[in-house]
Image 1 (cartoon, one colour):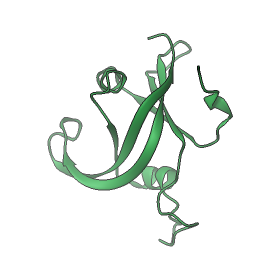
Image 2 (cartoon, helix red, strand yellow):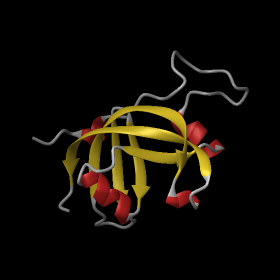
Image 3 (cartoon, helix red, strand yellow):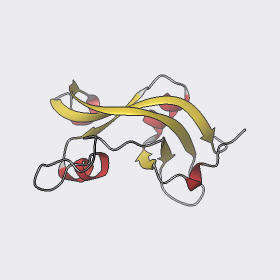
Length: 116
């Protein structure tokens, strides 16, 4: 049974490339990374410009993550359960194997998907 995810305001939309999309679909990948930069701080945290926290939690609390592969009308998508966010330092090929601070978005079960 498909969950009507479009009604939830707490869905985090993310576009990713095919390699990472396929790994999430196959449950190999259980975290999605976003570099700690101003854009992602605003999207993923409740931090104000002055450094104070708006609300009870530093991180925003989403219910789902909607991943799309590419752009356009008929792009494949999946809805995945959101399990939380933490910050950590990683070495990753996307960042040329340099150590970098990232937001690690924890992923749960796949809830819904387009025809993949």
